[in-house]
Length: 234
Image (cartoon, rainbow, N blue to C red; front, side, top):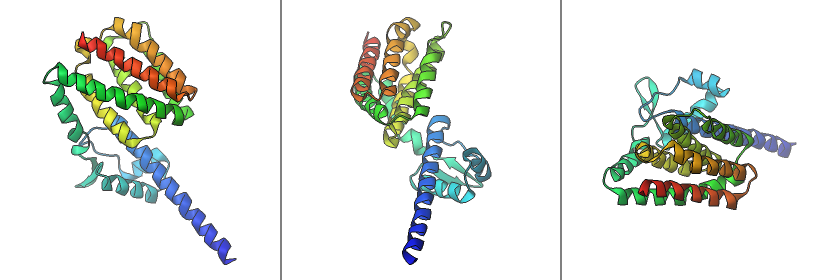
């Protein structure tokens, strides 16, 4: 009887930990995708409604994110820390302002990181991740798409692959590298390049991820980023 009671308590604690961890990841993903340094988070009540979670679980998740340096308590609210992105993105932007050699270095870092990330995404992507990637590829093929729309969707594509990898560190690094490079895209990218190279390869990357083909996903992402780099070097 006593053993059964202990197992019951253990089951409760395990469920609680899983709920809290899952909520923390969902909140972190929301911050990465939709918020900027200095932004104020919704109230606890709003977060409870948004994530369909208890106030206790929300508070535990917020505390974990504060402990990891993503959030901070200020006045009457909780905010994304000013250093969350800026600590990484400022040096990257500075690189781009120097010369093409520094851009080359950043593109090489990106290719190494994102090809491995695509491989992880192929192993770990959920049905929801795959639907999001397929939707982005569908939108990017609109016949009347503008260059600005393509660049925005391209950024979302790379972030969706990073999110599908399930690795928080890679998500943060790729977000910052992509955000830094986004500032120079209009100088080098054209719709002709997008239609002839980027979009077909993005389709192949999504196909590989949806079929959980890790090696092909890595190869196609590396090819995609090599061709993008070649465009910038012209």
